[in-house]
Length: 119
Image (cartoon, rainbow, N blue to C red; front, top):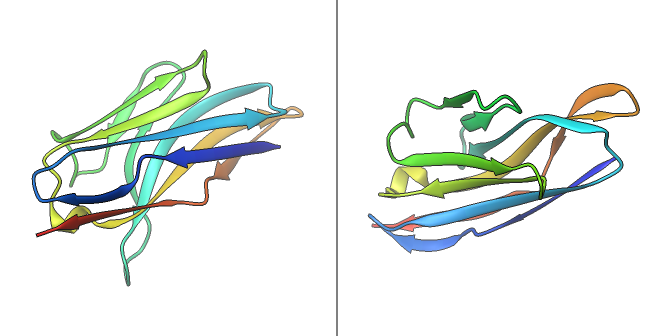
C-alpha cells in the first residue's frame, strides 16, 4: 500500500504564496505520476497539476503561470508552489500518486489539505 502525507496548507491573503508537499511511503515498487487535485465547496474535483516520472507536466487551465509542480524522487515527494493566490484558489487540495504495488498500478489519494485565500 501507499501512504501519502500532505503538508503546507493554510490561510493566506490574496497575492500570497504557499508551498504544498506530499510524501509517499509504503510498499510500492515504483511511482509513475504524482500530482495535485483540488475541490472547492459545491464543485467537482479538478486537476491542478501532474508530473510523470519522465518529467512531463500538465497544469489545469486555471493555474497555468502561477503554480509550479516539482518532484523529488529520492524522497518520493511532490511539491506544489502556489504564487499569486486568489480567493478562487480556495479549496481542499488532494495529493495523488499512480504507483506500482505488487505489479499493479493504481491511484492513491491523500486526505487533503485546506487552502484558504482571503480577499
